[in-house]
Each structure stands twice: as C-alpha cells, then as structure tokens.
Length: 395
Image 1: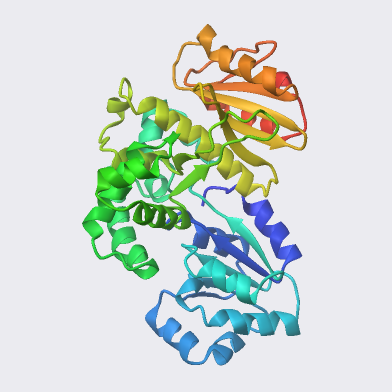
Image 2: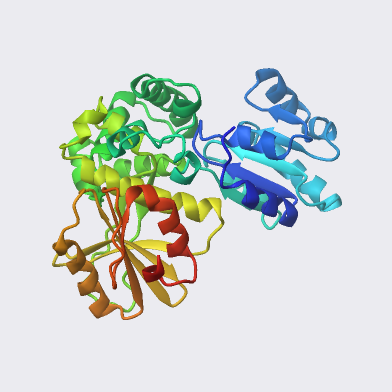
C-alpha cells in the first residue's frame, strides 16, 4: 500500500471519538486504509449477503461478536446498525472502537446525524493526492497525469484508464444511483454526467445544463446532488465578504478526479490534451482537487472559495486563513506571461490582507517578489505553504 496522507488524521480521530466514519468515493482506498491502520480489529464487509442478512436480522447479536470494536465496511448497506452502535458506545465510550466506512453519503450522513451525533469523527478520503504518487509518476508528463487521474486501481493494477473508467461508470450508474434515488432514464442521467464533465472548471449554470440534457431545472439540481454525495464532483462557492456587492453568487463546478473527467469528456489519449481545449480546465481541476484533498487529509479548518466580479475578473482559488486570504491562480501554460499577474494585483486592491501564488504547467518556478510562480511538480510544497501560517512569498 502506498502511504496515505490521511493516516495521521485517522489515528487522531480514533483517539477523539468512539466511532470514526471513513467516507469517500468507491475505489478511493478506504478499506485498504482502515485495515492497514487498524490491523488488530476484526473486519467485516456488509456488502456480503450473508453478513448483511445476519446484521439486519439480529443486529444486537451481530455487534456482540465484536466487544472491543471492529471495522464495519460499507455500513450504509445495514443502516439499522446505527442505533445499536449508539447504545454500545454510550455504555462503553472507549475511543476508536468502531471504524465505519461508506462509499456514498446517501443514508449514511442522515443516520449518523440521528444516532451518532457527537460520537463520530469524519474523515473524507478521496483518490490519491499528488504528494502520495509524485515519486511514482515522476517520469510522466503533466498531460499523462491529468489523463490518468488518481484512483488507486489505475496505479497499483496497471489497468488502462479507458477500461477502468468505463467499468466504474457502469457500476456507479447501475448500482449506486439506483440505490440512492429512483432514476428511471439511466441513459439521460449518463448524458448528464458527461455534460457535467465537459463543464469542469466553469461557472455552474444549472438552467443551461438542464436544457442541454432535456431535463427540468429541479431534476438537474437533484442529479447534481447525487454526484456530490458520491464524491465525484464539488461546487466551489464564490467569496463575497466585505469585497463589494457586484460579485457573482454562482458556484463553480469541479470534478474531483481529472482522469474521470477527461474520460467522460471523450479524451481517449493523453496527447489530445497537449493543445486541446480541456487542458486548461483540467489543470485547474487538478489544482483545486489537490487543495480539497489536502484540506480533508489533514483535517484543516480553512474554507476554500473563488472570486469573480460582474466584469469577469476572477481569482481561481481563495483560501480563507483566519483574517488573511491566499489568492491562487492556476495557469496551464508552460511559459510565464506577464498578464498572469494582473488579476492578483487587481484583487489586492480590494483585499489588502491577501497573499498570492501562481501554480502553472511549467517545470521551473520563479521566486517573484510579490507573487511566487510555482511549477506543477512542486504543488505539494505550495499546498503546505498556503495552508500554514507563513508568508507564501517565502516559498
């Protein structure tokens, strides 16, 4: 198993809460991580029919097999266990007794809120971060990395991306979606997912998205919530505190894995990204996803936003760090251009407490006095600087 950044956070949560919920998309490595960090705990998968039948028929006796706790995998398949877990941890509130995993939020979050509020710590595990695989992928180009993405099976099994993503979509559509909500027209939902992938890194216009798919606005909203609950996409909210009123209130849509987004958008070879229209949006998606992974893996409290005014001036990412802001621009180009700095200078006129950083598609960074320019291979170091209480200009 490749070392995961979330290991320390998982240990911390197990020391703070009697139950730890490890959630995230399918195939992100949740089971592998839970079993590696807690090798002495019994492991049971509620995906197994006989195990699930036992848990549903006699939950008290089922949990009685594990007096000192266990790893309960895919627990959303047996939601009746939650109320019994509450009774057990209240009677014996030892920390880190139960590690529960779930591939989707449908039903899981609601049951936890109802039964285990205050007793459970959450860790949201996404596919590999760049820091976890940068040595493994050192020989690959940026285009190859964006195209392949970061799901573990693509790196430890050698499965071609076009094969794995096709099977992943089929499994997700035919299983998770049907378990979550009653979608009768799976073909239309499939088209909706593809349309979302083509819009990664863009302002979310739900009305236009719905019209392109031939569905209602309310249906598009509901289906997008399904993708979010499955940890496939996220909405980055706009920042509008104390910076004037003429700002956009529309969020931006991002996939949480560039490989899956590229495959859905019809990219079948990394070479198509060299001069293709999706190179810029996918690079921005890569950077935003890495910031989200870092925040979740390390249980960071900072909030993430973007900024855009009605004239179209935009900052790709804002990190709110107490009373300070870190403004980040993502540029897929390989040559630093002077006009890259203008949006950051314009934003500084509104927010005097902002630091700035440019992450770009080149290999070599430039330690500019006001705004350091960081090559994409140094993204992990840039993340650490942006989230810590230090000046990014010292990067």
